Length: 163
Image 1 (tube, helix red, strand yellow):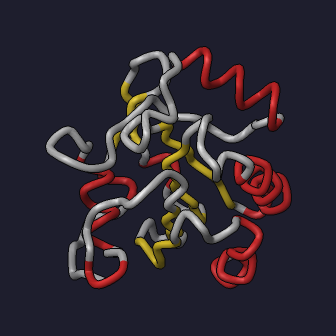
Image 2 (cartoon, rainbow, N blue to C red):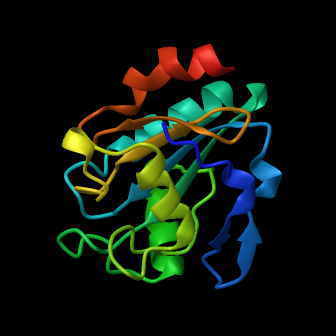
């Protein structure tokens, strides 16, 4: 990991309604930050993410999902459509943020930081696809990056170690 002194508390995120929220209130929690999409082959991972949230939420764990339309245009909907889809199909109760671009010049500072803190294979900074996951410790530092193919339940041991 890098020597960047920043933590999750140094960043903001857009809410689905367009308001900007500080992520400082997430400090002290173990976080799983994920870029998501409703029309992706990995979309069923919403179920596993919800199960992690329900299982560990009371112990200080939170999932934060960022819908993203950059990969195969698999998240075309509005904020309301995305929220409705997730609630109806997966019973989601964890926070959905506003849509983001995770790669390129329009990627918010949070996503630039996540990618720099935990590069992908061969040091790649870019996100390859939907459902890339970043695990952060209670100090707000990135501990690990997981590939889209890593199922949420496979992260349990790492999450428990941080709780």
